[in-house]
Length: 248
Image (cartoon, rainbow, N blue to C red; front, side):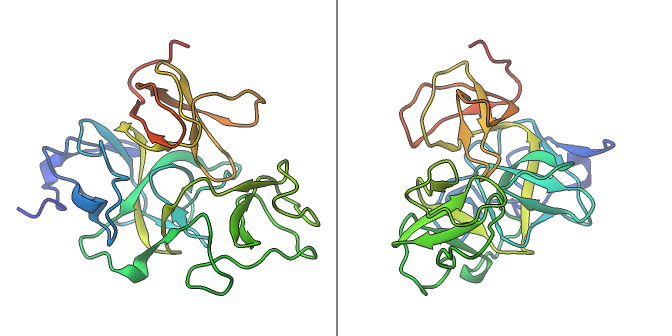
């Protein structure tokens, strides 16, 4: 049996989501390398029961116009089935999993590095002080990758305006625009936390890039239904669950 396929009895109908009983199989990703062309383990925990996967279109959601990073949070537009790491009004908060097929080649996804050469493959456009950037837009400045924290971002140079720009904290696997990916609303996963965290804390999502955090000191992050299950330092991959309430 191909581990990426599910029998009909593996699905329990719901009004907006399907409950995947899995039985050791994954509809979206292989455990080794997460079903992608890379040796990234963004799907760690994906085969642990149960997982609530969103039902969108004939198969699954697809990456939006800017692509979507996996192994972090995103926002799903149920009208067009596209998912983005930047928050949008009316969209559903989801956790993004890798590409939904067995034969993911290099052209389907790429690695967004923390530093990239201008004009190199997959590098974002260089920052332009005359342009207006929306929340979640990525740019290149002095060889470093930055994302816009807020919309209507113009004239604020990356690297000198932390209110407007955040620096890419670590490499991420990014599914290219319109390529299928997995989106779930509940489960147990092990994403990488930029600032680490304390077990029992509620997990929050950055509305600009979907990265997970275990605290929300300035109130700018979005609360999620997940609880951190492990202590860890910055940039550690830590387990979180939507089935256990926070205690901190």
